[in-house]
Length: 87
Image (cartoon, rainbow, N blue to C red):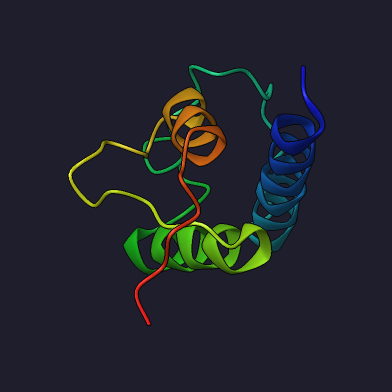
């Protein structure tokens, strides 16, 4: 696994752990099939904040047409982002 993917994965996992604690939920098993909204970890606003924090931290842009609510999809999209951001 390359360093960028590992860093993104760790960043997102930390955000998931923070969300679980904030919502008084147990930390779920962090597998690529985890649905971040259906799990109750994030509501729609929290999910948008998560995406924004990943974009800001790693200087990338997500395609709004992609389904990023599943952890594996989010990590795949982040790892494959071209890093271009609109000014």
